[in-house]
Image: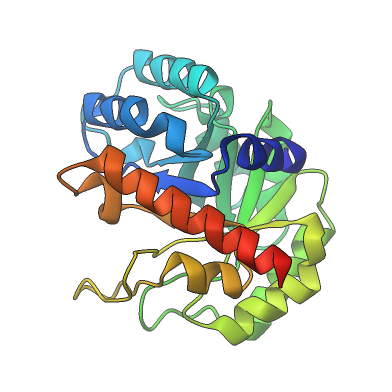
Length: 248
């Protein structure tokens, strides 16, 4: 999966993941079709969709295959192994059947990885080593223990969510993980700011400098009047920052 991600990044000159945080299926599909050529991943929250039907993931999967991006279901699994097995493989969403990437909290221990791996079909796992909201409890010790857990399960875990608002911790995650894992950084906007609800933002350049491989952008694109144009701006900013970092 890591090789697949990196191949898409190089082919499309894009390390941009867009969060499609809509509550209607048609809006997610419309956004995906509009910006699919600009992204390497689309991040979904399937459990916030108010009109979900089994046709939705089929249509999204078809778009992803046609426009060559991966589907990252941001489920943030956080329970015992047996429960996450049921959440991942069953219910009404059947996430294991259509998501390329999923994520989980490591706070409950390696059992959560075992539970997800048990029903895994073609997906890979990202662990949350950090988060962006103000006052979060993800300290350095937690982050590095998460990296160690990933290294013990590298047949399934492919990366981490890492936050550039604590660059010193992100740098240690990068150093501990090496280049064998991906780091995805959320909370990205072209200008640093806050949303007034505890979410802080950083620029693509800062995120890449601090060790990110992939930048995750949400409202900066899907709330804009012209999401196609904004996606192109973020794609270029992320790709140029990556090239600059590689040459330094």
